[in-house]
Image 1 (cartoon, rainbow, N blue to C red):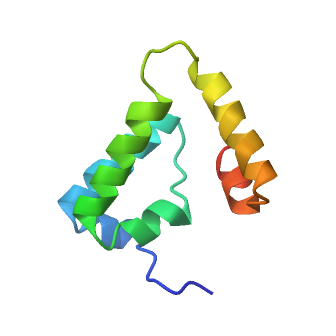
Image 2 (cartoon, rainbow, N blue to C red):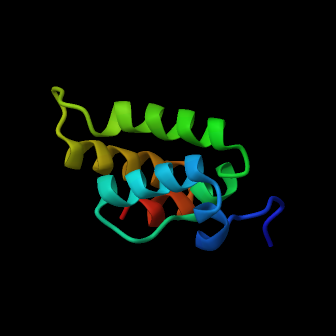
Length: 91
């Protein structure tokens, strides 16, 4: 059971700042799925945008480590930390 409200797609659509981030998540990750982490953060649209932009700046920019390897590292760390939610989110 969630301890914070998880915004539905309909609720997100009513908040332009949230809808913009959700659209960017979908486009960046090439999926229609928005996981509960983002739906919970959507209760504070400014924080949602800040966290998404920060994550994107680490996970999607050009660098010495390609995006696939970054995701594999994320999964390895999530596994080591026994965070099944994180593992599912990044596979």
